[in-house]
Length: 233
Image (cartoon, rainbow, N blue to C red; front, side, top):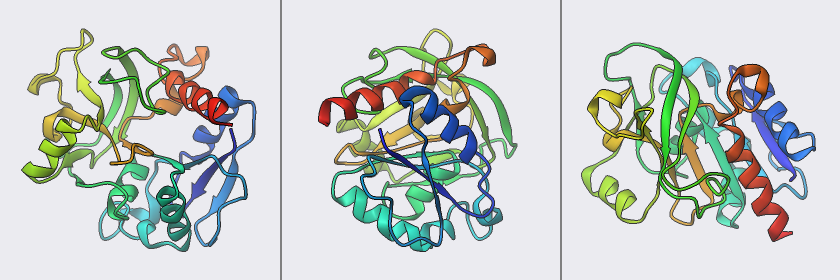
């Protein structure tokens, strides 16, 4: 699995992401600066990591979405390449038009930094095949603007097309207002593009891949990607 991790001014999770990718795939990820106009040859997966790109000025991800490298990412995605955006990366993917909707301020207007539970809605995608459908996983969140919102028709389309891959839930898998940590529409924590090759999610699976962290629930996402790409090779 040849991965490329984008690096913007203010991003601070790129090394966490690169470490997770190497632990699972055995290969170092290429670190790609925001001013580049091309991705490394042979790239299988592009990752837009979390952080505070450009200080979150204007809107979270708004400036990064217009960086030179994003033209290459849009072309890569249009050609069927796999793209993963986490936290600020999710915001950047929405701002760049690769995913619908927008990430708003958390419902209680407070920054949230803790472990949360997610329900895996399906496991027949490259981003979820490392899990079982309906499985509950625990991963961290760290965001102030993770409240996913879209117009009613868009949310209905996402639901109808099975494009909601991860949803906030209780430890038992129950979805409801009391378990929706940031007020996101339909408790959405992660969605995939229409073609199924671009995933945006707010939680940080890259921080739960090693035993030393006390939980390895995030590892399944990366292991599934590696397995998918190995089969496609």
